[in-house]
Length: 147
Image 1: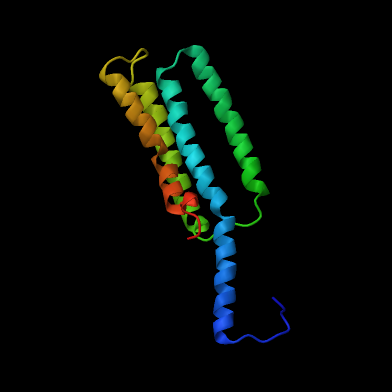
Image 2: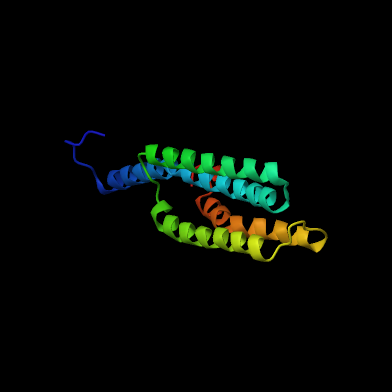
């Protein structure tokens, strides 16, 4: 677009929509990251609740590397899409709450060697811990194409 030419009202609206579309597309990375973190949280908590010692250690190391890698990736993104600013703080606080809750439940409620219904409870806790970021992925819907 040449900034020296004047636009009609219709052309201005079209240009605004074009720019909004570019911003929405540039924010898709956040939806994919939320989805990735949601799936990773379920796998992490399942390993932490039900896995033997070496599996728990591997999951903790992987989680740390995943966190560092995600911070680096997010920092390198230059454009944040519409909706991300509104969702980010809500999802972050909710996710921290569910992750801390899962950690406390795993420490104080689940037995050292869960069997029977305790396995179902551990899997349920793993799923609940991932709900905020999975909700964020659903709200961003990066798989939906042009929104």
